[in-house]
Image (cartoon, rainbow, N blue to C red; front, side, top):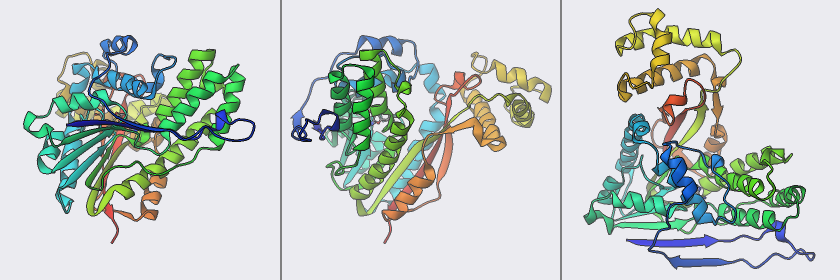
Length: 412
Ligand SMILES: C[S@@+](CC[C@H](N)C(=O)[O-])C[C@H]1O[C@@H](n2cnc3c(N)ncnc32)[C@H](O)[C@@H]1O
């Protein structure tokens, strides 16, 4: 097994000198075998058994890019086993869908998993068994090593870990943000420099990865913009004690990152897949429930409509008992499988009632258009399901993700 670290640095508009010249483009490539110790902050949060989004991480000043990604991965790795029990149907569905995609691949030489992380929803052993070479790509080398250790020893030699940016812009951008905040004399100065970075944001060349008969992009795209944004938020908070939201262009910054990530990612998928190869794409497209001031009436309707399901699952005997049955979920009175089915029903009913109970995470229409423009077409009907990421928060706040998955190939 080989672990390769490759990073590309981009010109930094925030550090332009008076002549407008940029520092020279750098690149490095090393082979790394060792792993870093856990950061105390991440270990502490992980011990609480929470799956925390990177934006909630404690700011760590001067944190390097790989360390930043590894700290985020540390928290996912530390998710409590009880929480993971609720992930089972999501994990199984995802693995089944990926294996369906494998069946449509013309050849079985190279499979590449982008943003592989821990690979929990990826059938890594099956992929390593069915392809000559399995390439895992992520900026979080720690998580990939953990996933590798779960594989049977005889398959590990087919696996290659690449600690590489899957985008043409994220690592360069994070480096630019770090420098911009570091050399600023005030928050206002940082905002000005970040503004210049934002104005100059553009995609570069796709990452240098092997042509692949299967390309897997699972739960990655919606994460791509969040890492540089969270990095900027942490850097500002750490150096000047200000929230990124106080920057008037903060929303614009995030929107631009999403737009760039979509375009960049589709271009990468297109560049990697072989002519008779196949792409498995999935992502979290919406998050819910979003609390709303008028949710009382909707909640009553949803709970009434959920009655037959709750009765069938043995959670209630009549409509009158459903509200208290909902309140008793996550109190270890029932199996996580039963509770997961109840949650899924409730979420689907909310979604049918009013889509505003879900916050969109990806511009799905734009993504579909980009795929079509780049010559990618669907090979199968899309599928969607729920991932109960933080099941016990669903009743009081966002805890579930709607996942969409597509199997794509090149148009003839
Ligand atoms: C939600 S996880 C995907 C789930 C993953 N299969 C798992 O089980 O952990 C998103 C992954 O994308 C990676 N990622 C995000 N932006 C990246 C980038 N620009 N380059 C490489 N990896 C990136 C993160 O490190 C993380 O492991």
